Amino acid sequence: MAKQNKPVQKGPDVILIGAGIMSATLGVLLKELQPDITIDIYERLDSAAAESSDAWNNAGTGHSAFCELNYTPEKADGSVDVTKAIKIAESFEQSKQFWSYLVEKGFLNDAPNFIRPIPHLSFVWGDDNVKYLRKRYDNLQKNYLFHGMQYSEDREQLADWMPLVMKDRNPEQPVAATRMDIGTDVNFGALTRAMFRRLYDLPGVRLHFAHEVRDLWRSKSLGGWKIRVENVTTNQVRDVQTQFIFIGAGGGSLRLLEKSDIPESRGFGGFPVSGQWLKCVNPDIIEQHQAKVYGKASVGAPPMSVPHLDTRMIDGKRELLFGPYAGFSTKFLKSGSYMDLPKSIQLSNMAPMLMAGLHNIPLTKYLIQQVMQSPEDRLSALREYYPDARMEDWELEIAGQRVQVIKKDEHEGGVLEFGTEVVSAADGSIAALLGASPGASTAVSIMLDLLKRCFPQQVSTEVWQEKLKEMIPSYGQILANNPALGQEIRKHTSEVLGLDVHEFTPDETL
View 1 (cartoon, rainbow, N blue to C red):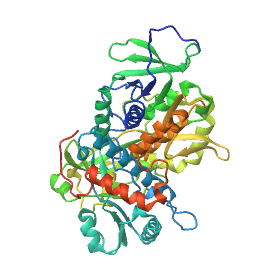
View 2: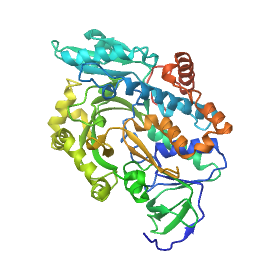
View 3: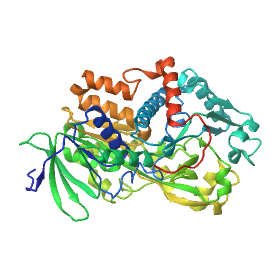
View 4: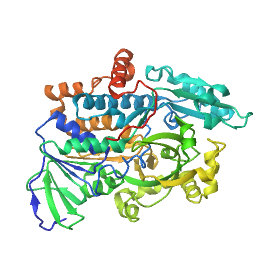
């Protein structure tokens, strides 16, 4: 398609679209690996981390698979598959290594401002679920990453771990829980904004807020890519040339990926899921709970809707949330347009999206039920985890949007993927991140994989290899299979990030 001539700005080496945790991570990695690289970051909103990376929009758990039961599914034969949990736990260890490096270097000033220790618990009730949790615990114990996990069916022990959850619970109800004391709470909004503040001070980095990328295409005359970007404040439009683009725009990534028209983008679609929290407004209740307590998702529920009673630190204040309650909106971003979903439908992805819809009718029914919930329905769901909950102690808070990946499948026609996926061009000149959970917690491992795909020659050099191992000591090794190295690294990162003391107290924000 012919493009109208616009002022062309001399381009940077790299353009990052979206000012969330993914772009921040990639930007910092690239500047550490190649200090003279030039980077432009474009964000349509007026601040960093305002969409999925914001603490009120993001799960914030520090997903390490300690408590999230959706990462350990029960198979048809009754066995529990822990493969994904081990992979996520290893990825989170990589994230902690990178953050520790940045803290030690002085790039990040104060770790407690974005990461704190908080116990991670899984809680279930009913005979079948108790059996499942026991099998999950037994399987996870085979890998050292989960050593230290405790399992209990003793009601006194459980009351000590989570008093709100156990108080006035039916004494005849079979219950069980696991607990990992080395769990964390991560404020990805604070972390992202801190990383961008430091990036902005580095030579060769330009950060543009209130700038929306409207289009992008291959530059035939100059090579690489051009983007068309609009200053949403002044309505000024210009074109910018670059050799590499990363699309890390959350729910907005799919539409821009489609505009790239690379063959690898065809067949991908998106299914948006919105969310809401119940936020506790009673300080006395907030003080009685100090844990992240995760349960089992309802049949047909998306992973982002796994219910949890969740202690958080947000802007220096201790919070208690329950949810999230899922919903449906055709927006791909919290601040997006209701036309996002219709505009994303193309001939190349229409069939996969239709087939994925047919295969996920229970999900559709679940979302309709969630949208139709009354305040009493939400309170009833909360009382499954906190039997004494009262309506007046909680208020509704709108969470972020998630766009689950839909992709072609040879057997099914189209499948709905509950995870993250990097889509990149064959020549490595453009890449986009699609999907949701576990997302932010595994940003470092996702960006390391992206570097291998898109900067293969540089990654293979001795200079980059040495730097990567300096930033992530386990780089190039399977940490899950190396207990000696893993335990040494975990000890070090815990010391640097202040995760040895299991107290959850307010601090100043980054």
